[in-house]
Image 1: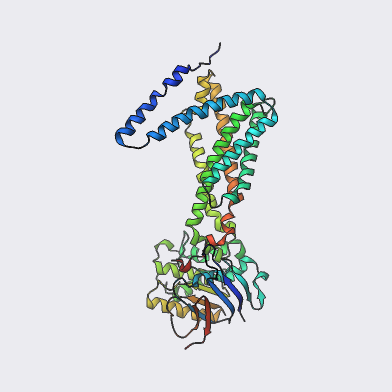
Image 2: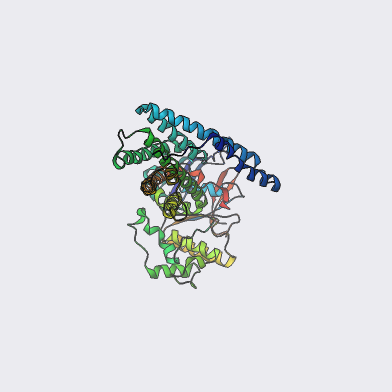
Length: 222
Length: 263
């Protein structure tokens, strides 16, 4: 079992509610799988993903391959259960600088940087083939910025990638292209994926559904 | 020869005539500042005359304990002023801000009175209180600006900080951009005033000394000492306060995330 979630609760401060916003008795998520997380606006999709990656507090336990989260360093957990926000964040510099920015952080200094060819290959697969790696990142469109942000997380080879409405601003063609690429990466890197999205992207994936303050599923494809 | 030129009580009263101009303009243009001008005038008379009397008393007593108590009170007011502008983190910041303000102010003022001016005793209130006051006042402004900028910048960069943290950044790495801009914002007014002094404006302290009969060249030397003293204490105070407080927004992670759907 890759991720094992038990007695999980999210209680945002100042909400005035006595009941937690999200409550999960038990949820087991397999590795190498792509999950889609659906639910209405305000149901807690973002909060669930942020809590899972350790960005906001939660009650209960989350364990990775049978080891409780407390056994891992904060940095390791945040990079390995990596949250990608809905608004693309770009730093000053080229596209390449943006993709490789995490390797300049202390906690990732020992990680091997991907080679230039690998980056080119990833750029092609995600639909950024028209861009030079050294082009200024500020010239990218919103959807392209989002894809650069995705690549930035992918090159760190996380165990889990949590996408929060990251494909929502892409047109249908690009969204399905990115999804296809992510499905392939999931297989290749033995990575697991949760994509939070209002509307399900395809029926080929395992479905998690937030309803009435808890998560139903995972439901198998079809 | 006593060069000191006293102001007559009558002149001090007549100077209120200057207030009539803003009052007339305000009434004519409906600026609505008449009340504020009158209150400011009254406060200016009241506070400064009281300060004069109070300093006179302190100079008479000149005991170590009284002077330190007076200095501690000035620090407390400075800290209160800084933190009243940041109510959201007010309580958490009391300890680091007080420690930094008190220590840097004290250290800089002591070095100046003891080593540079060679005053004996070093806490002679005629030097320690006015110099300490200048140090504290300027540090207070620098720190208040830096804090304001830091917490505002962290809020504005929320998405960027969350992204950095998700990529494995430490709190320091994620906050560094905001730390830099806060320290710069805190120091720039002091740097500007030190670099334009004497060309654009004649510093207040030098003006005061010249008016009270000091040779202008001696007054200039004092002013240099005061400027560099202020530059030192503002830098130490601003850097110290920001470095000791930068983690506070991260202690409540709900401030950095937690909004549903992030839109």
